[in-house]
Length: 190
Length: 190
Image 1 (cartoon, rainbow over the protein chains, first blue to last red):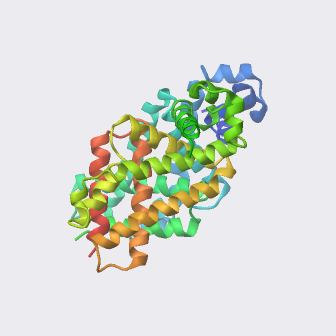
Image 2: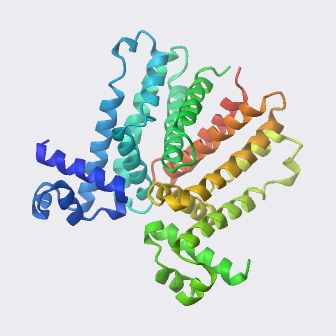
Image 3: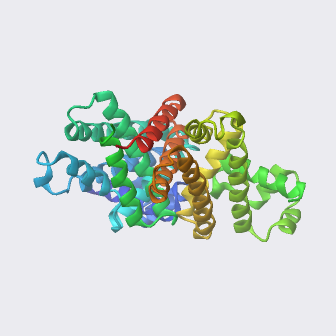
């Protein structure tokens, strides 16, 4: 992806984080990115494409920061690895806060803007699949359908906790503890 | 509450469900409710108060439809009772769909509109408390802090599943199954 295109998507994420999806106007995005609106239309067909590509951008960025976990952990202790990957989405850093706000906002606006639904369902599916793989490594005696269901629950729980944190209903440390115990509840079923 | 006031809040819920919180303008609300804007300002100080009262209205309405569960179930089988109360929030009826859409939208917009946060945190707390009580009856040997944590997780999971359903990432029947098994994971911990 060209640097300019990435810059525009980074700016779109910032605008969404500040004003929501419905606050994203192409003119404001141009001002935020420091480019002309015609350059934006050179890179993207329309507002719908900007939003779809921004969704992709924040999914990729989340993949990157959740991959930054301690590499020694991987394979050595698959359960800690799983825990780390999920907990990295509940961190009070500007990047994670921005990413989680934009993701929650794209999710919420897909209720009203149906053109986002297909991409969102795909991104959700990819994420669930990754977590199911980690669950499989942490719990090799379990079945694939059980891991898939646990992955759907843990990622939905994480989304629910994340928006409670971002909307001021839940302190971050408490959200992290609830998620950690939620992982235990999924993995230590009788 | 006066009938007229309730009518306005019902109309506000419909507007939020259709256009989101940021789509709620007092003029449009007046048109939807079939009243004048001055009547709206007679009942509510400003847009912020309308949103806060709408949050209260949809919380009360959710209390009402989740109280409509089979009365024979209550006390006879506290676990089924808990399951019913939670699953009644995942139903494809116009009322539940409207209520869940508006709740998710108020939750998401509290990230951007801080004046909603306090009321939202209170409504969340009340809901968590009710579910913790039901967990206490379903699992009398458990501790109150464990029930409180399970209630926070189950309600956050329900919010996460609900918005996936409403945004087209998850079929309703599958969401219900995931929630049912999530209740089992919380209650059948070793």
